[in-house]
Length: 113
Length: 113
Image (cartoon, rainbow over all chains, first blue to last red; front, side, top):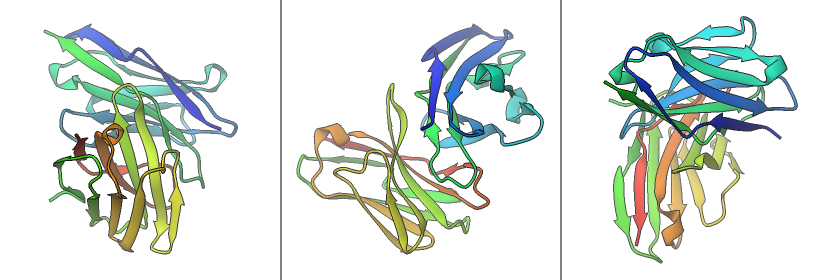
């Protein structure tokens, strides 16, 4: 079975500060890992993904995440928060050949001017 | 126009009523999914379909049914709606080779009184 834990359902940062959203996963096989973003009144869109290869992945809007197998983590970071980053972020895990993707509970990011 | 379109976007209904949520996609993907989003619970999979002849239950299928009318259309039905089915429902698609990347509609907000 696979699962995802997102630490912190709400995170507040100041504009210009580092954004760090935490995600830990469990999976019995090598995972595929995702971060999705949901803006108000919209569906989810893919921010970035890790499947194989380079463990540091870059996504849209300046976000990146690093797959750390030893820590079973896939934390999302952005060096400098922008007001437009305010949204809900979901970490998700799946794996190749299997159709089910498991989502975390989400982290709402608030950016303070 | 959106690649994944859900109708209706908002619906208020009463307990015991039958409700259908519709999803159509222009992405040409074979795989379609219905998820439910609740605050603090993230997204949970209701049903998924690999193709027109293949439909599978997800983790919370009780009280729901689906119909895959064509490659592009996947409908979710609540035969007799109850208040705890009040939620935001998302349709999503994916394509092989399956990495788990999902493409979401904008959601259908259902309120059952």
